[in-house]
Length: 282
Image (cartoon, rainbow, N blue to C red; front, side):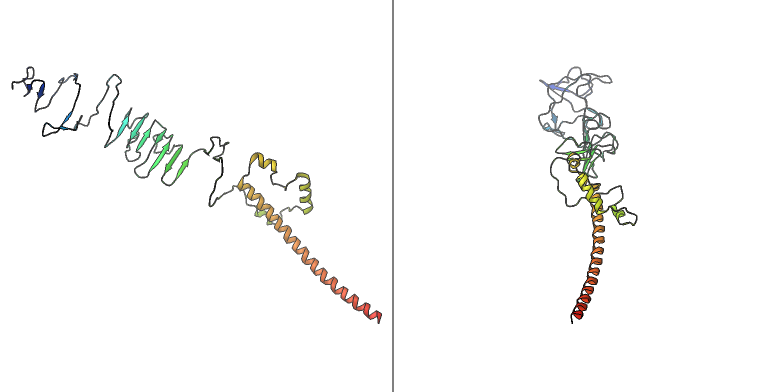
């Protein structure tokens, strides 16, 4: 073979349409030039067999597709990455559309998947988790955080409904739980048992029922239908009524005991009177 014309300073050879060299190829020298080709195939390093195609294999630089004009990368197979995979921008820039196994603040040990700036991020290597509507602050500003053992929502949660009526949790339907703990900010109604508690008389209770149709401090049926029931506050009110009822029962028990004593006294007097009457008849 004769050296290919125009490339005499490197050991090139040409056979029909095949150009080969055992050395590096520099197109453009120290300036930018273009290479126009229809197909590029990878070659096995020690033979002429087909193999993987490596771009920027050892220099650590990026590969750009499109340059100054927008171009699409069309792939008929899978896209795999052994490092960071980012679409649209680098994984350390605000405004990513997708980042895989990396995050926008450059901590590859923290996050594993992100879609759209500040909207969704996926798992940390240390613990599987999802973030919704977060900024690049390790999830501290996230609206929602889902881990393998906890769900955190910063604002409101609606189950079966989007309208929570301003409540932190709204469930449109039935709910079941083995235990519900309610902690009230106000005092528990043990004050009923204090000596200075103003216990209504049963006459006052009777008049309240006649006038209002329900016990004092207990919401009416129309209020319950309109506002619902606050479980913690309702239990507090019901306990207050139970404790008042306990005091009424204790007081009635004392009255009954006094009546029993009076009954015994009356029985003794009756027996004495009957004895005297029998003596008189004799």
